[in-house]
Structures are given as structure tokens and as C-alpha cells.
Amino acid sequence: MVLTFAASDPTGGAGVQADLVTLAALGCHPLSVVTALTVQDTRGVSDMLPIEARWVAAQARRVLADILPAAFKLGVLGSAENARTVRELLDEHARLPVVVDPVLASGRGDPLGDAAALMETVIPAATIVTPNSVEARALAGDDDLARCARRLTQAGAKYVLITGTHEAGDEVVNALYDARGRVDEVRWPRLPGSYHGSGCTLASALAAGLAKGREVPQAAREAQRYTWEALKHGFRPGAGQSLPNRLRLT
Image 1 (cartoon, rainbow, N blue to C red):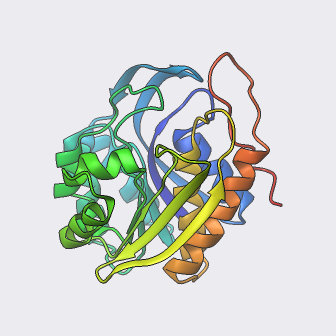
Image 2 (image 1 turned 90 degrees about the vertical axis):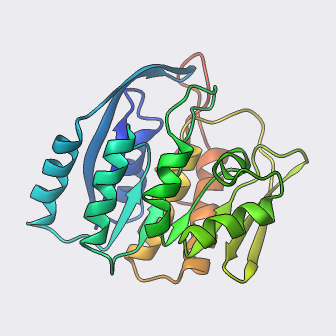
Image 3 (image 1 turned 180 degrees about the horizontal axis):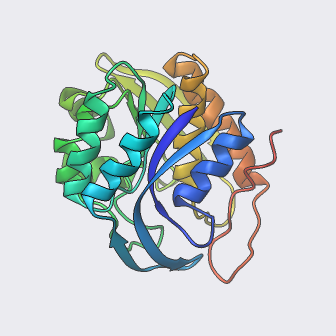
């Protein structure tokens, strides 16, 4: 079982809905805490209403008093106050692995998170952080991705998986780092088009692997394979980005 903290997405392409589908597809029972409501479609986000921190805490505490997950997954938290609240909850279950997807903006660029708040709260508690290259630079304040990863591990994250979808080239290069430096690198053929919810898919798949007892490097590789296949077989139901086909497990 995996408990996800995320915002709701009416399209089902990202957010808590994407987490639930991914986790269930990979054989994990999903638990969820809604951190914000969004007004969005496959083209972008037009508005967001953060859930009050006391409601975030109440949702989580009620579930955690009854069911103990095997891992946590964090997406959009909605506010700095919510980030602090979630960190308190993580500290109470410090032995469980934590995957942090540090969502700072939608694919279109609509702001969804605060880099400074994440660096001060949940990233230090992370087993692994999964920023894309744009997010890594915003979080660490550096253009060099290796130095960005070092900054994130110095902040407390045990591992950092930086995805290269926003970088140039025919291949997407995803690099895994720990405190020693780069420990793994996987190259994927770049797929055409753009996708809504790819980061949610990757982070949730990683959380599923950790919940099943995988070590981080193995879980990261398996999650990347699952995500690439979901994108490869994606579909475009609306006028904007394509959605990953998370139910295809090949």
C-alpha cells in the first residue's frame, strides 16, 4: 500500500487520479490525501484551491491510524503550510520510504509549487526526489545538473533522479544520484508530442517499487520502463497534451 499526497486533476491525467491508477496498475492498493483542488484540462491549469492544512492533517491521520502504508508519494502539496504539515506526518513515520515529485509548474508553466518551501520541508525527508531538469535547477539554484543533485542530497534527500525530457537531443537521459554522485544513467528514445502527468506516473511507479521492497536503483529503473511504455502507448482525449496509458503494463 502507498499513501499519496496530491492535488486533484479533473482530467485524470495528473495529480491524485494519476497516482491512484498507476499504483493500482502496479499491484499496490492506493491510499490518498487530497491537498488541493484544481481547475484544469489537458491544456493547462487555470486555478487551484489549496485544502486547509488542518484538513490535510485530518485526512492523513485518520487513514494512518487505521492503515499503515509501505511507502509515501508526494506531489503537489498546495501551500507552504501544507508542506510543513506533511513533513510532520513523515517524521512520525520516518522508517517508511518517501518519493517526492517536486511539482513546481504544469506542463504549460502554470505555477503549482514553491521551490523554497519544498527545500525546507519535504525534500530533506525524501528517500528519492524526482525533478525534471527545469525543476532541479529551480530547486538548487544552479545550471549544472550534477551540482543540482549534490545540493538536493546535501539538503537531505538520499537519492535524486533527474529526468531529461526538457533537455535537447534525440534521447532522454535520466540520471540517478546519491551523495557520492551519479550512480546510474538510463537513455530512452525521445517520444513525439507532449504528455500530461508523466512525472506523476514516474514517481508513483517508483513508490510502488519501494513499497514492494525494491532497492532504489532497481525501483527507479523499473519505474522508468513503466513510464516510457505508458507514454509510448499514450492517447490524446482532448485538445491539449496526451495522457499516459497507465493500464498497459508491457
